[in-house]
Amino acid sequence: QVQLVESGGGLVQAGGSLRLSCAASGRTISTYDMAWFRQAPGKERELIASISWIGVTYYANSVKGRYTISRDNAKNTMYLQMNNLEPKDMAIYYCAARARFGASYDAWGQGTQVTVSS
Image 1 (spheres, rainbow, N blue to C red):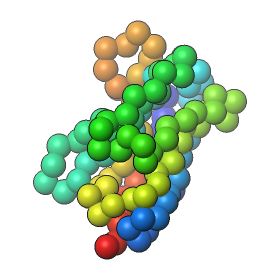
Image 2: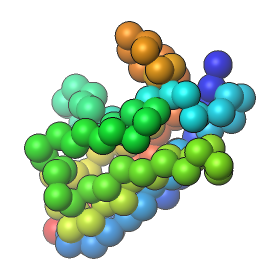
Image 3: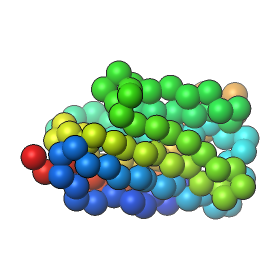
């Protein structure tokens, strides 16, 4: 099983940027689909971006054009570059992994808090 640890969250002003990292251990992520989810207070966890094991990306409409997901298999790490942050982006951000051809994401990090001040 792959273990995931997020980092890079913090407090930023509206319009600012943050880069989240998701470091994996236990398995190489080269054969895993990877994703970022977020959960705001009182809301359900939502998928915001994903990158398949062959590099195909997906973005939710709410972050398209502002966020960029990437992966560095040599470093066993995934990233989320977040630009032009808005107060509505404030949430706990989680990274997740799914073995290629798997049905669901079954490895999760502990989450990192992103706070955006207006």
